[in-house]
Length: 340
Ligand code: ADP
Image (cartoon, rainbow, N blue to C red; front, side, top):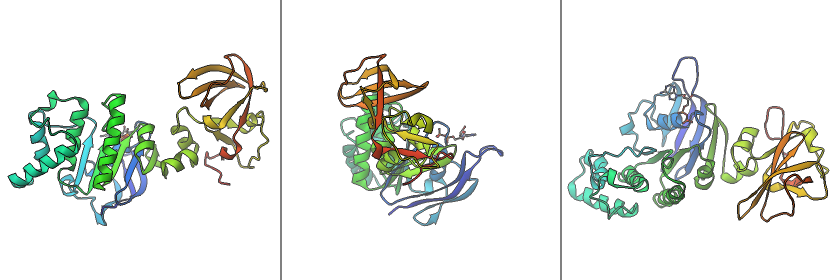
């Protein structure tokens, strides 16, 4: 069992500015939690504070009820995987895997057994005698993974582990990491700036901005009920459409808009082109094979419609826009979701 708790954690590197401000969070036992947000929002700092690699300015971090604020990284029982692999270049795969056990003075037989078990788990058994420079990026990341899990840590921490890999390998490793974590049932925190990784890997996602949490939720909640405009615009590709109250009145639907509504957001797949109308002009059409994206301009604002199949329209053509009313999201002047 491993529950990680952060209570009002703050961190300032310089005296005047907070990298993390009053962050509170509970990671459930066995959960795969993803921290996502733009560069500089404080994801790595949060992870490094949990690992003990960075001190905490104020607040409390506990693992399974034990406060770890003053515990050295080695005593926190954490396995960590970084973007740059951090393998020992002068050691073979086998030696890299064995290293965490060797420094804990595990006996030779146990080390051999464990290296065999783990190298099979991360599919490295044919490469044990190779050095890191003789491996591909994906294989190196597997060694880093194996080394992180070999001593059964209570917690896994991942800091952008797939950023150095090409797109195809990233997808493959994404699935490998998730199935490994499900198999081992170890509580994991995964940092990324990539919304696809966040959506596809996380049991829950924490959206961060400026050292604060914007929303915590399942991928479904984050995508379908973003609790603020920042989250709505950060997750989803192409980006969600934002209308002002004035603009929305031009659409074909009769909508019931809340008195407090300042912004209206609608996903590209919930905005519908009406060939009979003339309020927006089509500025571009993208054929992605499995879907079509229609870029539109209306009153100097840009919008995008996603459709599974091609529509019989052309660039420059004037069209109307309708929306799927049940999917309408309304935000107040503080850019927070108005719940109905
Ligand atoms: P992220 O991982 O989301 O890109 P970081 O946690 O690395 O963000 O950084 C959060 C903020 O803290 C940024 O403003 C960054 O410039 C600052 N920061 C990170 N590390 C240091 C450091 N060692 N010294 C001073 N400022 C730092």
